[in-house]
Image 1 (cartoon, rainbow, N blue to C red):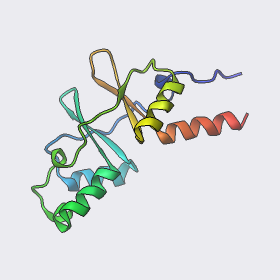
Image 2: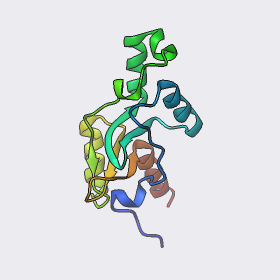
Image 3: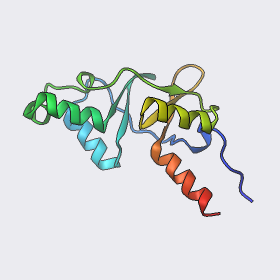
Length: 136
């Protein structure tokens, strides 16, 4: 019998698509569409500095109107969230779920002991886990 995952590290996505602060919103949109992602971490070298979510993109569209879609000078740094929820890969899944619920977050950014980004765990990852557990 397969063991049931217990920690964030066991269900997180560790193949990451990341952005840089100076990328354009066109770059952002291309990555979100190409990889079907709703959460893109923003890094500076190896250091996590922000997160862009589909909510951030919608907020930018409302605030900036047509500028958000057509202005080549608008950069990721202008719309990214800096209030990040980071966790360790060893965090128990129950506590991770509590954080997602309490913070009304769509994802948690997983960092190692140095603070380097190692993965992302999303609502979708929890849904896949729930589906696997009820299939038994």
